[in-house]
Image (tube, rainbow, N blue to C red; front, side):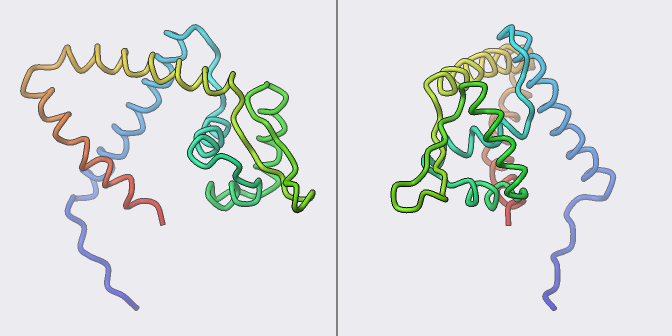
Length: 153
């Protein structure tokens, strides 16, 4: 059995950090959807689209493994995204049982539009902070990225 390192934060601070990161994500997602004037996609669909963007031609099975989801759940997401015109699902030439996934041009445009609106909204909010707070937020970014990486197995 391996020893776990002692937590650096007390339980209340850890809970507060988790809560504020979650709330920032939810508020930014809702504000971006309002700003872009469109209904947001369900979070699971967004995760799949971002995975396919990072790994073009990923199989449904591999996508399920990477998302830690059941293959039938990912198949349902794929079906819905194909119907919405956001995902291409094609059988692999070598094995017709294996489906490969790629983003459509509409999906790439939607993701780019979303990222542009999100950056504008976040930039506007950060600009309303004091110079010291802005510097602290910018300085924390690499550490928050590392923290997120540590949460993935």
